[in-house]
Length: 313
Image (cartoon, rainbow, N blue to C red; front, side):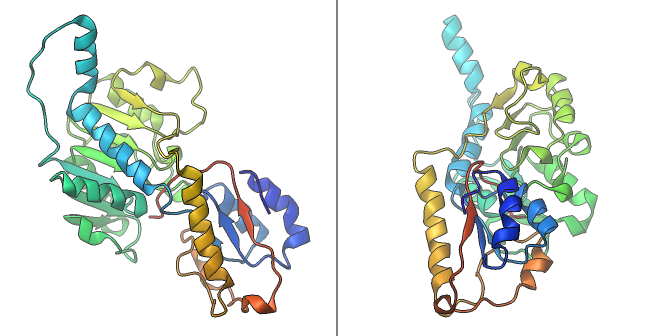
């Protein structure tokens, strides 16, 4: 079942196919628009996604954004245009601190690049049950540690990268209180879901030069409205949700689907090793074991369209 990026298609089809569907796969990493529909339908089937398909491209974007501000690229461009020979001190990422809000696959790929550049890595995670990749960070804090834990990441980091998934639990997770404790020369980078960032609060700190700058690849409303004040900010690096739109984009997401399909068709299949957690975690853990493929003829439902990367925690 191809849903074309519109979860409503699955809702429309569900009464006719619910008895035979045993698995739903999203060709996107982000499932924040799909999950509410499945919860409403009480679709108690495993949900998998393209987690990991876009991590490498997004990690490169994160480093590019840091270098954009660290190496003062706008200044270099302006000097060239004005024919100014301005031999200023060139900064380095080595020794700087990068803090991650959300530390799933995207953040961990980015953290590896940070480590290679000699940077210190801090991480904030939603759930203590998640520990995979913690060895990449110098320090890991959790939501259960209290509000101050997240503030510590913003306060101590030279660069803060948010790659949290969308949803009610992460809505405006990065807002005025967090931006207020950032370093004056700090940089905020968002490449998970736009709903995680309070854009109005970010506009204020950027407009008033409370932080050095920000890079946004995702927004609360997309396409970004022409009247958005974000367009007017000189200290903002803005990309139209295409940081992960690489030449191998489709191949990468289909490769993951084919891996999942091979797992699903295995005669010993009793559940996916890696499936979507979060809002549906309880339902997914209660999903009954699926019979071997030889004993069933079940369609696989998966959606296309609004592809993109986002974190799982």
